[in-house]
Image 1 (cartoon, chains in turn yellow, blue):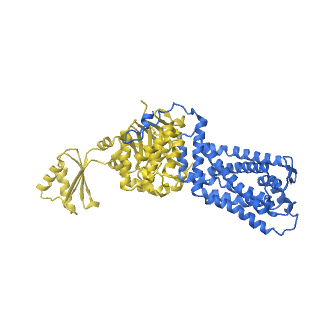
Image 2 (spheres, chains in turn yellow, blue):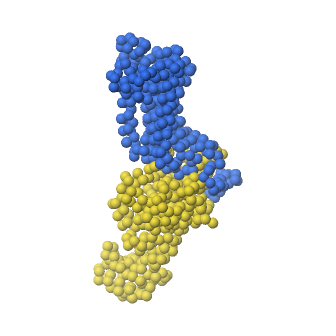
Image 3 (cartoon, rainbow over the protein chains, first blue to last red):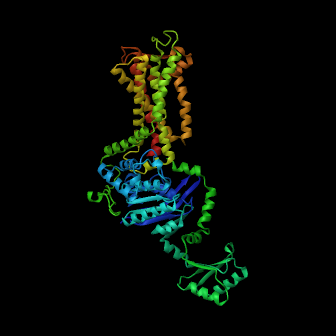
Amino acid sequence: MAPAVLVKNLKKRYGTVEAVKDISFQVEPGEIFGLLGPNGAGKTTTLRALCTLTTPDAGKIEISGISVLDHPKAARQRLGYVAQEVALDKVLTGRELLQLQAALYHLPSQAAKQRIETVLDLLGLQEYADKKTGTYSGGLRKRLDLAAGLLHAPDVLVLDEPTVGLDIESRFVVWDFLRKLREAGTTVVITSHYLEEIDALADRVTIIDRGVVIATGTPSELKDDVGGDRITIRIREFSPIEEAQKAKDLLNSLAFVQEVIINSAQGNSLNLVVTQQNDALISIQQTLNSAGLPIFGIAQSRPSLDDVYLAATGKTLLDAELAAAGSRDPKAEKKQNMR
Amino acid sequence: MSSTLIPPKSDTNWQKVAAPQAYTDAAPNFFGELVQETFALTRRLFIQLQRRPSTLVAGIIQPIIWLVLFGALFQNAPKGIFGNTTNYGQFLSAGVIVFTAFAGALNAGLPVMFDREFGFLNRLLVAPLASRFSIVLASAIFIISQSLLQAAVIVTVAAFLGAGLPDAVGLGAIALIVFLLALGVTSLSLGLAFALPGHIELIAVIFVTNLPVLFASTALAPLSFMPNWLQIVATLNPLSYAIEPIRYLYLHQDWGLGSVVMHAFWGDVTFGGALLVLLGLALVALLSIQPQLRRTLA
């Protein structure tokens, strides 16, 4: 069976900016696939090429084995695209927008009627369906946009940053909705620069940075690859450095501890990388207590996708975001997105 | 297929409305699809008009004000000065009909430009349209309908103001002239909407074009009023080719395709000749924007 989406050696340049240098990934039917990366990594450009909104300079893109470049219309029929910016006609009602959308995908009128009812139910939009979209809140607008993307029952639903700018509640509505889609067999491709979103939703993820792929796998594979659990210990709320140093030496002697760093930015807390084992916290507590050291706080966690990004690029996602924010040109980007 | 279309009570049976189509870009029913999408896009524009009628209302009130004010302004002009009519309103109504159609068509690109800027156009471009020219076609249908409606109102009001009412064939000729002019100008405006970077630039172009084209035509005054150089400009101005035939049939009971409607510096222009010029201009405009449309839409 052909992959739901195949992207191979994609390249795209805007003027002097190489938005996408070399991106390849493959999405299996029925999975939620995440593209994770900081703003400016090339996520949106990749999706725009996937949805036939921009022509790549080089590379191959296929939807269920159909080349997007050679058979754009057949590919469009199988794709649903939900852009980052919700573009609704504020004068139309929700139902009228869906009717327009149905005609653009050439649904027969009876089928269109039923599909519109279906997606309105699915996204809880019935009571708003006959109100003008200009009166909708941000969450409602997004839900209508999702309904529109889903109207023609695409094989692959592509969502660009689906929860940016949404309140927490709407965000969970979207997450819940995407999980239901997966249960029903729709392939979902989402981009996000929210780690927890990709972690919570995606079956597999490709992390991209500055137009290239830096890692692909399931979130747990990727996290396992960077190895070990993370443990944070605070001896006191603000530990004196001597005490922290003493604790560090003690903990370094434990067999399962791989690395200990004193984090002076957080009151000399200790950040540990340990091999995964269940009684790590107990051993640490015993070791510290028998040396007469108190424990103000202790927490253990699996590595996060941020740790994966950090290991590959030497910077955290947040740092990359901040760096990218300074060097971006919103006007040029808007122009790229205009046809 | 229909079993999957039953409105869902649960969340699970909403998948797949239709089996995937055959692996081809050639639509099984190209014409039917084109009609469906063009109709839907045109419907959107008419819904907008119905809920936001201010542009249409302004587009009807403005020409009426022109008729009344200019009519009053030149009420006491010496007889015979505007050709063989004593009524400036009668002279002017042709100019107002054409200018109103021209101004409306010139603005045709604005909604498309806003769709580009707000990303709504992307919604249309990711859809498997039979042809993306349906987007352009819908705009043209909408603008031309609006122009014809405005022309009908102006003709009616002008009749009440004493300009008289052309016969049925004359009204048909007016509709044809408005159609051809609106088609040509709408095409150019839509071409600009895809070529220019944003609505500020488009509005600037509309602003710079609008009034000079009006004043350099025979809309407000006959050729004989103008200095030579302006006469040359006015006889090259497409608006004059729309105004003069309409004016002729307002002022003459016995008009025909062979009637001379304008004395240009190189010779006489007949009614039929003017229609051919307008048809030619519409075709040239349509053809000239094809490369631009192909670049952005194909």
